[in-house]
Length: 154
Image (tube, rainbow, N blue to C red; front, side, top):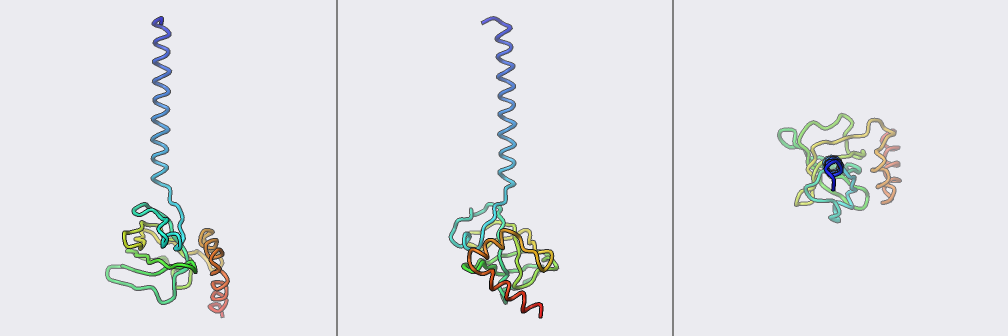
């Protein structure tokens, strides 16, 4: 092989290797930032990966909010079929209350409870995160939520 072709081959291989490394790093970074949504049923059935940051949502169960020391809060979230416990340390959103739809971001612990580092509440009375409303429709709980919302408005 003549020296000019050899040099070109090494340059092309170096460029391909660089592009391959860049793509691998980009995919790795994106994979770490993906927050998949899981319903309480999926978490209770063990479908959610333990220790990986996920999003979970549903309706806050009535009478389940327990406040502790240093802004610690524990509450239960349901999709109508299953219920999970969510633990959060911090200030809850102003619109957070029992019977309302929420989405929590955190990690599932060994005991099956979600340790949240962020809790999001719906921003007005008509909005519900699409994932939560879909989960409630699948479990048949949406009708009960709508009835409860109408009673609350009276």
